[in-house]
Length: 65
Image (cartoon, rainbow, N blue to C red; front, side, top):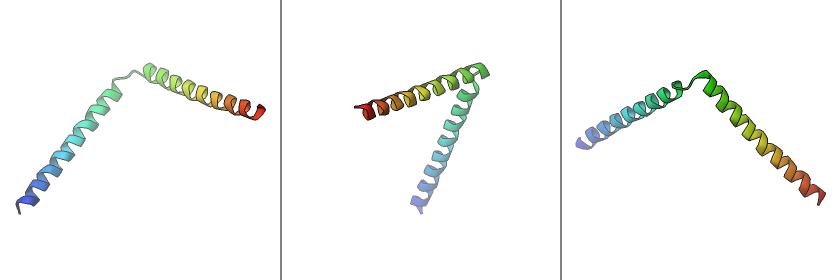
């Protein structure tokens, strides 16, 4: 019977710790201004475009060789 109690307390502690992490992440996410979010998204899109451009250029170079 003791094992079930220990398991229950451990599960409760795990759920509580998960809730704390989710709340912390949500606070960090809401701390950004809309302009900061927009700038970060634009930077990420530019990075992805650069990777795709490099991949397309590499494919073109491989085909020409």
